[in-house]
Image (cartoon, rainbow, N blue to C red; front, side):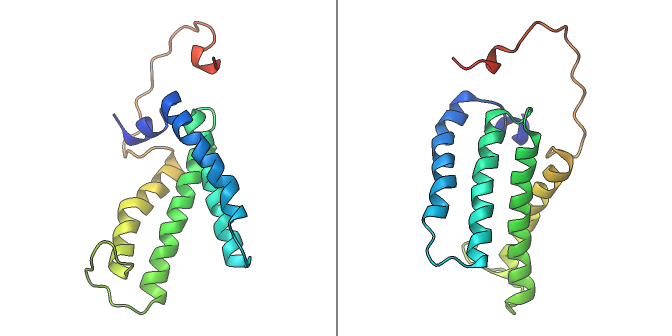
Amino acid sequence: MVFGEVAFSRSRFVFWGTAPFLLAAAVGIPLSVHDWTLQKALLVAALSLACICALFALRDARRHPWAARTLSALVFLAYAGYLVDEVLLSGKPIVPTPRSAASPWNSILGFCVIGLPALWYTLLGRFTLRAPRPEPELPDAGPDPEDFDA
């Protein structure tokens, strides 16, 4: 089983278990900000967009492929920003540090382990290096029962 297939598997349990929290976060984050600045507005917009994209991707990633790709693009941009801030702007040396510390070393590790796979998913729509095998075509048996909410 591949991570992307599990994460966006159209599980009703996962969707209904997370949807209320994602929706509350998408609405609550902008309401919780005081003293708006351009930087805060961009961060709030990105976080709310991430929540909304996660909602659509968990609902049905096949029907809304843009949602999962937009979410992974936001993850890539966050790690790219972290990398630039720590490596180029902080002036700190690149030495191994504890995992919980914000440091150039940890930003490089995070970018390689999380940021680059997120970019890969954004560009290709999959986490694997190998293209998926084409599924055999089955005769149309009518509408999918999961398309109808009970």
